[in-house]
Picture 1 (cartoon, rainbow, N blue to C red):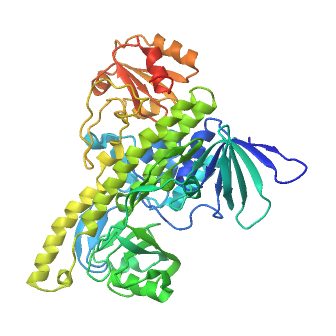
Picture 2: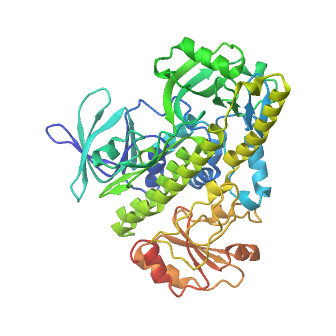
Length: 562
């Protein structure tokens, strides 16, 4: 529990291990990672509660594997669309008119059934899930609040902070005004979004590119959260999860939130327009342009945002302060990579903070956070920019909608490009599973070379620094389900070498290590070595033929040695 020391005079002082500014997916995921390890943390967010607007709409497979690790992947998969609702992405001239391209993807129910038979690039414990962030945040909050050591406060904001080298001293206050409180924390994590107060107070600048101008997904965008019960009645083609309107008048995309009547609609703002001043009448006009006819809608919320960012903070750490999520990297949301990258920031940082706070690792371990996550942020923002270019730089003219031979030819051209684009942006196992930490000082390399980084294909490899190869076992369970919550040493094959050196070294170093013995020859073939050390974030830290160097390997993997 958090320890509250209330003196005679306000403000009272709260003692905690980690102060987390921001209660979005990144901050809440970090609270779960810390809470399950018994680390005291306090999450602050000025909003009254978790997100009302849908925001991100796609949870990638790797994120679902982490939710599975924490025990609530099934709960997440039951939310959002009905289990039999299509998750296709369809491209149309306008929603009520011609279909140009489509990528068919499994429903939530089909994903559960199919995953155990899938191999190759999609050999995984989980498939992606199409669910709005508003539902995910509610689940993350519920589970975070179940941990006795975690406190989550919505309606509270970080006012200021200082790092005196020994601890963080911060003042926090209710968003509507009220008694200011002082927080003493060992560490501060700024997961407070694109306009991060934490990043600005530290003076950390953005690197990367911004201001990309495209016909679509570049510049000002108009966001509309709406209810439209009559939408399916005007569709001339099978329903989908996401609908993309491709025409010269109003480019847009729209994701189904509940599979019934709620939608998250985003439209490009044309040169000369300023959506900041648009009224509900304007919103209805713009929606009708994308549909191709007027439909009654209920407007739940509306606003604007800017597409065209591919930004990464110049630093992810300053002393006892860390940046994560949108405070550390800002995406154009092509491919849905921003929220998923934020979740993995929390996964990476969580076990490291816990290890240091519990005394199982030196503070030098925390230096690996930026070394590992900053290149991944640069990689992922680069992929998102590539996806945005593919759709946004595709030129659309009025000819596309003409009833003429020229119109037929233009629609054929669009169909070819958009079918190719759909597979580029939405079939991305390489992006999802292929992120690696090869340059990390806490990865013990073995001289092997990982496969090329390709967004649309993934070759499983146990080369240290990446996600462990996955397999389904004879009992129907996932290999990943056998991993320990902290460190795992896989001992593979019928004649696996002795593991006692790892077990004794782990005990000496205070590392929570479990040996998992699996005799199946296929697993030995998959990992190519009989021993593999798996980190708490399910990354291969080392693999090898014997345990002779166990003390050195564990020391390096926990930041004790170079």
